[in-house]
Image (cartoon, rainbow, N blue to C red; front, top):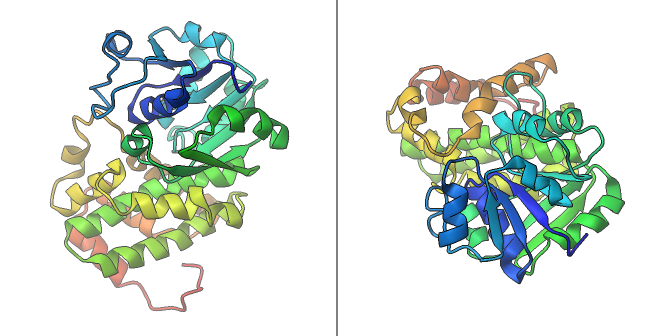
Length: 331
């Protein structure tokens, strides 16, 4: 398995960065690109100026626009936008035994997590979730990163996948908690929008770090209610990813929130985006699921209000006006 060709489905910034990381030791990587002409550009110019212009791509990355070509791979990293994961999997006539889900989000039309989508589309496959604090351009540049690799197939799957994915500057840590790994990645996108609003309003680092802390409590409540493990959410794919995403304009979700805080409307901020701020899709369905499970998610409520057109200052004022309570209180 460790020497077999590995495939990456999705040539956005994160998919391209993962392909670049996997090819860093000269191993062949097959990268599927949806956009017309992008595969040819990657193969001839070794660049993806559309999504990752900073990287000169390794020549062992071969790109294709044909999903059928991916059938030759022994494992696939699925890096399509979360809202399109199911449709892309449904277009593939055959799938390998190992599917590694690298997209962060919840299917808005159904409320399903990505591992649930994948299990339905590929009932014979073993599903793993790769998630953690990673900015695409840093991974592509070979800077050190650590992630959670949650293997639904247990340690046997970990033994197959870890040597195929690990590189000197890319270190996966084992988990068997698919749900927890996914929940952390989905919820932090919503919380990052809120932190971007705080930055856009100029409310300072004290406010942002308070929001990160209370946001993590919200993530933990939600994750445990849906069957995730607290220790997973306390790790790289939960707290680690939250801190990174809520602290930098390199985050698409943080940038969206910052634009809202600076006075841009949600419609304007979401228009003409080449890359996807998944938190905008996740926030409404996250609220619905939280209500179904009786979980209080006030920051998610605030983000939904923002996306619904309320002003950033009014929404923040509403959060600040919430009743005082003990820190360990459920909300």
